[in-house]
Image (cartoon, rainbow, N blue to C red; front, side, top):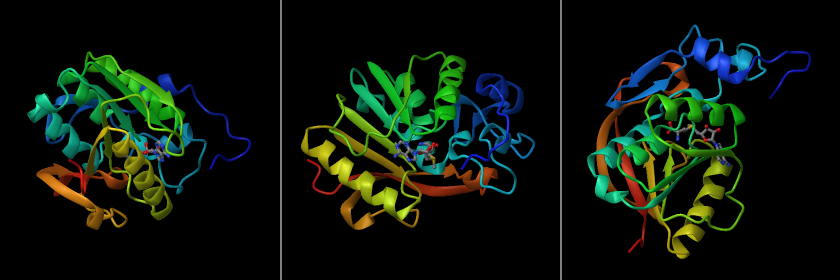
Length: 221
Ligand SMILES: C[S@@+](CC[C@H](N)C(=O)[O-])C[C@H]1O[C@@H](n2cnc3c(N)ncnc32)[C@H](O)[C@@H]1O
């Protein structure tokens, strides 16, 4: 929530100045502007400490496992349109583009994430169309593959996302979820297709490597 009376910096200049570029642990092929303790991210978000920092500024384990999976198996995205829902830093979208997707779209509700995705795409030499939107109440998008990294951290959001993913699958879109088994991941409705050990940066500090899963919706043919 934004606090009144706070001036906000230009997001592009802020990210360039305060979020150093570094390789993603477990995904050294990808470089990202990543927040650290000295980034003062709350200033960009119009918040004050100790409000929690925005989620887009870190590579989360759910995104990292999907990125690792797509880079290791480029046949999953080659020649296909890919949409990254809740893209955050753009980690999964960048992996899809590097692995040969025809087009990559990244969507996030946070406008600062969209700025970061543009900067991160340029650093990695890939093209991504990024826009600020909440599409999970809408009709399935025009895409072949929907990738969802670490979006099951909130109970209401998890319910909305699952309903959307079911509609997407019913319309012929392949759905891939990356998640380190967060509290609201509906594991009974999913099938795990792979596991990779990746770092989890929840809250901005590395918690070390965790075994995170790549999931499809159960019944996915
Ligand atoms: C935990 S982060 C994961 C980011 C990235 N996928 C990753 O794994 O590194 C969750 C992201 O989802 C975004 N988000 C939350 N609700 C959303 C919604 N309804 N539609 C799109 N993005 C959403 C947040 O702004 C945040 O950037």
